Amino acid sequence: MGPFLEYVDYKNWVELKDHYAKMPRGDFSTVAPALKRLGTGICVMCFHMFITLYLGFSIYFCGSKEYVTYKTFFHRCCFFLIAMTSQRFMYYTPWCFTDAGLIACGLAYEKTDKEGNHSWEYITNVKIWALETGASCV
Image 1 (cartoon, rainbow, N blue to C red):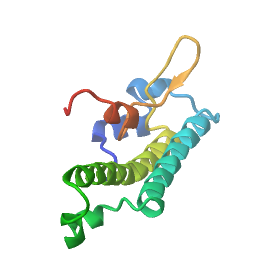
Image 2: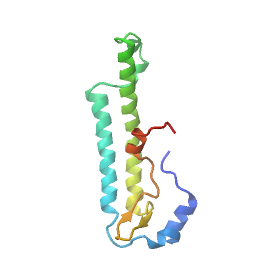
Image 3: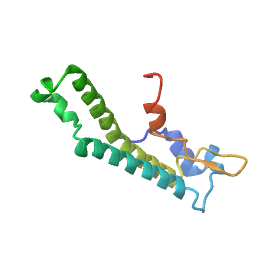
Image 4: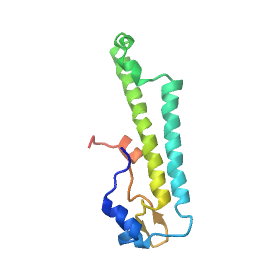
């Protein structure tokens, strides 16, 4: 899929209009936030690989004949929960990498506060912590 952004945002970014007119240019203010998001993507990828390859919680086992007779129903439910959580983290990886690219080019610029700190969350694919700890399925 890729990142979702509206054409008007892209056009405003290219023409430096709307809130992009105040975007910092010519400095390296995007480097640290982009590297942080890239690091998040790498950590998420390592978490997925650790759970899947090292601990053996592969989602493909859940579709096999051996899974039907695997221990008790409670063990199968726990296995499925861990495998599906790991599978979600596999998708978080490219979304974080895409966020890093959007931050690096400046398209994710949101605002600059009174202290001069820049916010780079205008276009975000996923907020992992908010999604995983949300109290609602919505």
